[in-house]
Image 1 (tube, rainbow, N blue to C red):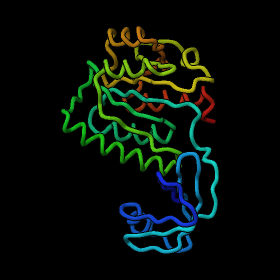
Image 2 (cartoon, rainbow, N blue to C red):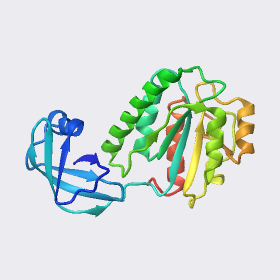
Image 3 (cartoon, rainbow, N blue to C red):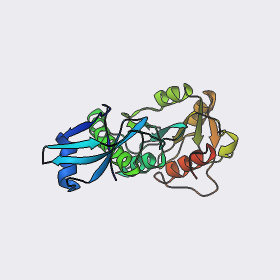
Image 4 (cartoon, rainbow, N blue to C red):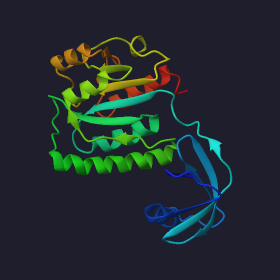
Length: 240
């Protein structure tokens, strides 16, 4: 069933317009009588299409149900900027796996160093990818993708979270020794293709981050965040 987000909780009827209406009528080619779901965070609303054209789609709201699709642990992914379009893939899959927030950052070993104008353009694209992935995976929220920050700013933000962990290619502890099943809020740091400089690891440690390993194999920049996020979701009971 098609999944759409709204900031307004629908009552008996709800009307889509603009891009959402065009998506329903054009891309999805839905018709009168077909069903879709509106998600408003805590609740979902199964609906039936009453009328449809290229600019407007009106649905009848059939019921209201609790949304139980969100992980009970809020995870912020601090991702060092990778090369090329790898971030597109990371954003899409991280949203599917349950990430709450994505903060790209520039580390000392990042090859990709876009300027402010390029970052702004990329951020808009990444947020659109996050929306599409949230709809596809039936999330209860649309995770936010923020504009890229410096490494120091990312480290400061992570220090304010309940727990944080950096995945280091040179080794560390098992994730289960750093993240407990009860944790409600955690940040995770993933490096770029060149990994982390030793001094960056020391900065993160000084701010309370645990240093973890994903095993003896070296994972690609686009593989590591997904493996790490899957491990955290499993440990906290949000996967399987």
